[in-house]
Length: 200
Image (cartoon, rainbow, N blue to C red):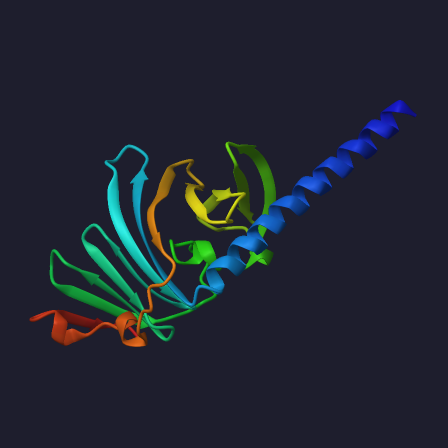
């Protein structure tokens, strides 16, 4: 009897934590969606490498991501990846169903694609873990740190199937970026002499 009661209590505890994790994700995604467009500066580090900095501007499905050596333009229809070192850009069609979790998708990923669990809380910040449901993905898990006070994402860590970690930390958030749609499209004129590889 006691054993059955213990199992029941544990089941309720796991259910409650799962609900809390999903509630945090729901609140976080709603927060960023209602911003319209926002931008953020962040640092990132792949395990064993130096810490780098980057920036991102997001507007719905559109984003512009700048990291060391490259810049990605996504206007919702096509993705242009510009590589500064060789002054070259690769343009491909945008597929929103692709499973990679880039810094833009952190704020708008499909919850159905992940098993969501609550991992703990410290100093007013909760850690929520996402584990891909689909097999064959390159990502093993993503740990998101979300503020309990304003539901903002402060940092996240992605672990791939090989166990290698990539850590991102938000340095500054601008909730009112007011970015024009043109900002998310690659403008060849702004990059003199660029070599264009159209992969569409």
